[in-house]
Image (cartoon, rainbow, N blue to C red; front, side, top):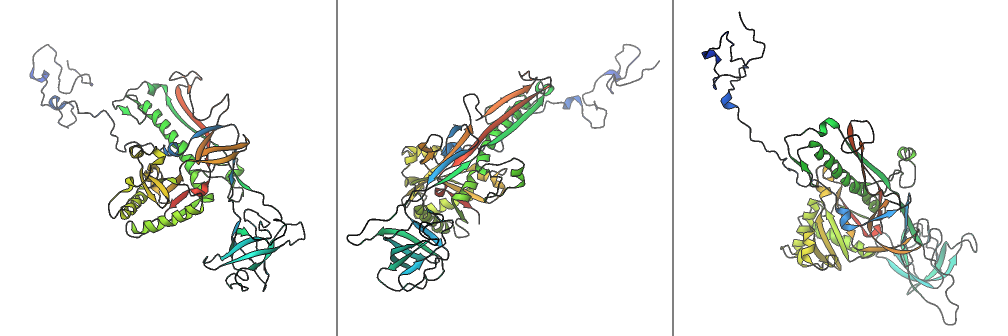
Amino acid sequence: MSFTQTGSFPASIIPSQKRMALESNYLNFNDDVTGDGTGLNFAQQYLPELYEAEVERYGNRTLSGFLRMVGAEMPMTSDQVIWSEQNRLHVAYKGLTNAGITGAGPFSCSPDLSGQTPAATTSAIRIGQTVLFSDEATGLIVQKGLVLTTLEAGGVGTGVTGFTFELYGTNTLNPALAGTPNVNIFVYGAEFKKGTPGMDGSIEPSFTQYSNRPVIIKDKYEINGSDTAQIGWIEVATEDGTSGYLWYLKSESETRLRFEDYLEMQMVEGENAKEADGTVTRLSTAGFLGSEGLFAAIEARGNVYSGFAGAAAPGSGAMGDFDEILKNLDKQGAIEENMLFLSRSTSLDFDDMIAAMAGGGYASTASASYGLFDNEQEMALNFGFSGFRRGSYDFYKTDWKYLNDASTRGLDSEIDGVLVPAGTSTVYDQMLGSNIRRPFLHVRYRASETEDRRFNNWITGSVGGAYTSDLDAMSVHFLSERCLVTQAANNFVLFKGA
């Protein structure tokens, strides 16, 4: 009688007909216990040293936080948010084409006013006002004159389209202003003779209206019921404090963190589906309208500076470029305190620039007033800001992780940073019918007395405590509807790569 080995016994054990102590029935720790020729034996079956926790090789991977620093979140009940912004107080025209200054005295000026403010089609220059003319090409040729009469191309009451004037101090018009070159004009006062009537006509203030619309942002995580009961050997831990040996906890938590980043990135990167002139696109025709984000708003209504510091030596090129930016800020709102969110390379350019200002020593944190942080330098540093002062402006600088992360804007070199004015602005609210103060940057989300769509999160399926369907799975849903309001974009500066 013989036994057939069918896998019921280890290969090293040979069955016997009788219960006997045979050499072939003993286990040898040095024998090949697997029978596959690898030579592994019982003496080598050690428990491996396991690192149960994941290694956080990318540190904190979340990117949100920019809008929390510079803005606020407020509810809205409509499909559109509309706000109005003040125009400039004084009358000026820049780059008038075909100014047509002709004659030997009095001189006649019939400029093309299309696209100009404060009047799109009619001039706001009146009889008796004193005006300054300069050539747009260099700005160095300047002459001053007194408006004598106004011109109405279509007859009285059709709107002023030009004026006649005489020059102060000379009867000769500079050739650089004559004919059809582009000129700049602004009103600096008025002069009337004794015993004459007052100013004829008045200037009605105008405003510029802007709008934006919210977009619906969604995401979802799903896992079947079996996998929710499966314990792994890796202890998971995420940025929001979730931990344990259930892998789906990590997946759900990371979906939530990723969605929270999407909420901010959408506000920063959002684009309107239509073209800038309102031309429809295939996307807008399909019903996707888009929403104007921060970068798009600054590109359209703000200031864009390309090639900051350039290829110059560290600090040397940055100083000249930065002073150009300050000169432009003087022409805008001249807001004293501003925040700089920069990429790593641009931040280092600023460090080198500040070091050059301090004679080679980095002294930026000793030169700003820190009014934005209750005048406490330690508070600013805790938020990751360092401050410096240049001219009449205070700047608070920090690195913007979004521009450095290799999975977001770190992939390209288009955006180097953004300058955001601190504080609030006064605007006219169409809904309230009054002036209100709002942060220059703030988020509006859809909400009413019965529904709040700021951040919605719910579970469907038949797993994880939800019993909404017979699907043997847990689906975690995320939704938000929001848009970004960028007010007074003329005070923002977008730094772009050259």
